[in-house]
Image 1: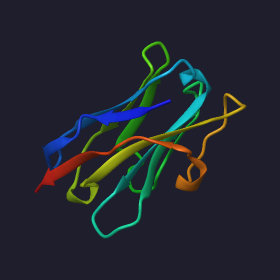
Image 2: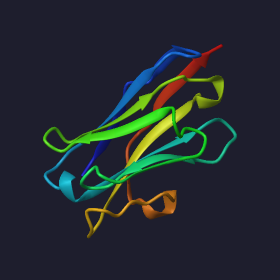
Image 3: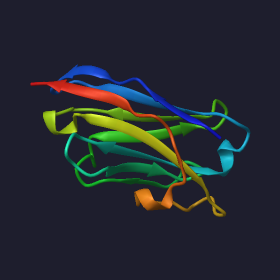
Image 4: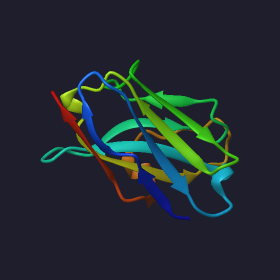
Length: 126
């Protein structure tokens, strides 16, 4: 299994941006997928995570009500829709995955994920 995050770039404060995480292989439906971000000099921060079924989604407090995560199990894709972006959202964004026995499990700690993709950088102009 390999993950590839894409869609980063320069965005103006207040605007929207959508990131994608493409997952290779044929086990996508068995995977919980999370989004994390890391700004220079800061620890990697939990952004969101989505269960295997897509029915359970958790968000970090700093992005709740602004970001939306979804998944397309037919296309092996997970999306992070970022709305009302602000300068504090500037970071490298990573998607991560791990298998889960239950359709309803979600993981919020970076230590619970075993597969990581390369990040995609989001820059915010104020």
